Image (cartoon, rainbow, N blue to C red; front, side, top):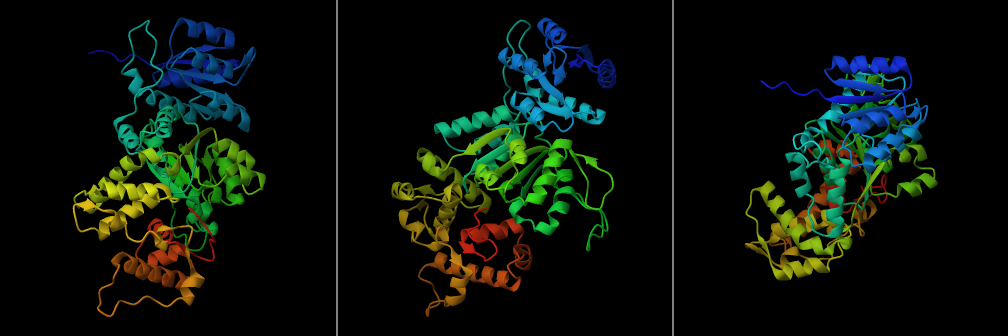
Amino acid sequence: MTTPTPTSILVVDDEPDLRTLYELTLLREGHEVVSAPDLTQAREWLAQRHFDVLITDMRLPDGLGLELLRELNTGLRTEKSIVITAYGSAENAVEALKSGAFDYLTKPVDLKQLRAAVTAALQSQRYPSAMRPPSGEPMPRSAPPPPAGVQALERIVGASGCMVQIRNRIEKVATSMAPVLILGESGTGKELVARAVHECSHRATGPFVAVNCGAIPENLIEAEFFGARKGAFTGATHDREGYFQAAKGGTLFLDEIGDLPLQMQAKLLRVIQERRVRPLGGVQEEAVDVRLVSATHRDLAALVKSGEFRQDLFYRLNVIGLRTPALRERREDLSELAHALLKRICSESGQPVPALSSTAMAWLQTCELPGNVRELENLLQRALALSSGAVLQAEDFGDTSDMALRPESPTTVEAFAASTPVSAPTAGIPADLQTYLDEQERQVLLKALKETDFNRTAAAARLGLNLRQMRYRIQRLGITTPADGDDET
């Protein structure tokens, strides 16, 4: 029976006691460990052999640990790097991640976090290690994503240059712990990209927890994020975990991060820096092990200038940036995208997939589609409901002036109150079934919202929906409530 080769780790730190502590900790985990007190000796070790993981202090007697990271990148080496920074040194941590570090730790180093970081770094090499070339040949720069990652990338449809670029970038950024910020208009598939980052990473087997920051009542947001202890507030009858605890070992996706209140922004920044949370009503802090991915359709740089978003938090979240392009920037993908959406919609509803006629495709090409992929999906769902054949025709898409399909012309509560409710035609059969059904749904939603003082969570519960379904319907029908103005989440 072949004995597995132990993983090799190079530790670089100028403090002898700390070097010994790190060495002993990692040796007990079964790793082979060598150490160096400075850059000079570290370079000598790296010239002699390959390591699986490099752990280096930021400040060394003869330079910065970042120099080693940059040299590894230049030499196309595959060692995963973990940088140790001074407590509270946010700039150094961000600089390390941008220089290619897999992860960072802050002093004083928690040995449990050290072991977890090394394990994660080694797991991220699982696929390339199985494909390692013979000795003397160059190491591959990156490994193919795991099977779940391949499927996630396939769901990001499009052969245009910008879509090829974003898929390539997802594969590249997935292999580290660096925070990712996804920017893009509403309906461009930001959550799809976030899921692909998760599925392509070593955390793919862990949970993916998606949170809409704009959908949580401000008085509950801390408990939702960090958890709460029994008795922490009225109604807290038992301990409950928050989003950070639920995402342990996986990815926490903070959608619409631009809607996060300023007070919560400060608390989130502290968690990112210290990697610990204190549940509401709790005494002790708990270590958290999550990869953060954020997204927003808003201009965060402008919000920073106006004082609505913390600059230091923006700096920490925007280590790696991704941008999801609007449909108008990739019109050549429209046909492939429409067919992929049709296939998925029909798969979920259990109906056969119809073909798209050339006239229907030509009509779609003339649409502005300001709602991007989400609006295209709504159009296709509408056409499927109105069509009676095996081929979708242009006329199946109905009246293009329908307000339910035009988010720039929303139905307001005031306009609804002043309008006359739609009633069924005398014959009992509406001339346009989809328009009639949309109007009935709109009236029911508005009635539920008004009776709950426009509390979306309460209205959703009354209608047997979850909050995400409620928000989807409000957006699809173009309903604007007094509380959210022209909210576009």
